Image (cartoon, each protein chain N blue to C red):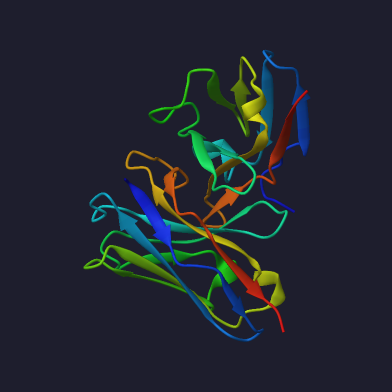
Length: 122
Length: 110
């Protein structure tokens, strides 16, 4: 079936990096804009960034500038989110999400991954 | 500290109608399109409304959206116990160059 399948939970120490993958399955993802959204425990949604279909263009929230890298391997229909210099406040569920094709404000996500819990703890 | 303001909670009885508010500014809600999401416990968010008032395929007509000025509203009619969830609004912020979300509203169906 049509889905985004993310990699599993991770436990990292402060200062380390984490790389979460997001693989499109059951459909052709060549035209997708993929976003990353995170949710800290008991908190709301926080947008992190976006990558375009070719992987040649990204936009990151200012909060994550310098720490976040989103890349794409079109040959495997996989998008990667790499967050460095982790701190305890980065503990959250990280979601990838597909932007709806006719969305007018880059904020419509019709397909979500299952989420990947990243825990940052010493 | 969310850019968009949502009340923390609302409640209503089964079968009734409920509305959710989302307040922003001219740099976000006022000049961009709003989406609404439903998040059931321990699941990913689900898109209910996009472009202020459009429903994705598969979303029933009892969910509706509207926008006026710098505020947006999600409405649900014919409430069901399965509607108990957190509801988030989101839009683009032209000043921050970022997608922004509200803090979410928890719906309790009494």
